[in-house]
Length: 479
Image (cartoon, rainbow, N blue to C red):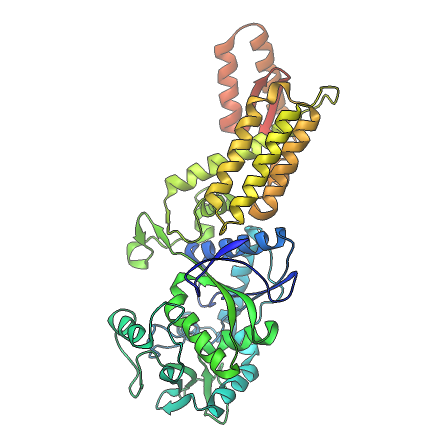
């Protein structure tokens, strides 16, 4: 299995530290607001990466944090805590805000059929571990104190910026020119970051008394402390959005390796941004959508998931409602196809050995695509090739061939997570719909095809029932 390792800036053969086991950490949501579809895209792709590893025989110990304190507005260590801002706006406690948006995020994960991480540690419950890491850094001379908090001196970490492929000087120029247009007073370098922020007198929640002063942890120290607690000081794989690359993940590496003297993570995988109608999501443009917004517009969560999987995780995806509708139609077609193949009987038919061999080859090519840096566009094209060839062979299909196709598709779904087996099962047809189906059959026998076609359209539009005429008879599927 090959993956693109951001740290190496190239594709590499994946190899775990411990044979058969992968330690995997993913940056979770900062729970100050609902997850938008850009967040959701990242977690769908992360789930896919994990499933592909599992399909390759690895036991994946997956840790994904919940940031419920310390994530500040902006990149310059000057803003307020995002959760605190929301709490003040909604007149609720920080704990209430964090719980509400965490619960909503977990509901979205469940709706999308994402495999839950083994652990989802909360930042607020791991402050002792963060303070322990801060003390190690302090003891080695990496920290200094200014008015707003305790900061990490990035000039003292020799390899700062290597995740970006930039030198220390180059990364400082990059950040001051773009992301950090302002800086905290007293910083030694543009890239220096807070490991501990001092609180104000009016801040009562989510603050801790320490030898460094009353305050709360910096966002970057949280992920380092939690990942190392559960996966060790050196682990296999760290995933996250591409937006975390220049600052958050760069700072995780700097503080972790400075504290331990060890390589922090072997492989880094970054998921690209999502655009909406070719533009960046923003409240001012009114193009920020939640998963629930799509559901309320009549789309299934799986249609969004399929749309995400149609794009390679390292390519920027452009979301449009037209593309979402196309994804839903495609997915409905897959479900209907599986339902149709389920109905194949006739074990007396002689299996077509050439077809079964061809299906096996396509099945192998599907997983070969995924093992080549999670190439989902190519993998999905292989799946549709199998469906296309199976459709052409359907009228003469044996039970053995049908079982071969279903086995392949359900194997594909073990990594896609699109509920092929559940969604494709034939549901009970109402008496009214069944009466229309029988009436249509009578009309066809009487060669009254125009009237029969009207009933067929009615069944599809009003009852979401797809009728297909085959040499085996009428095939009925729910859409």
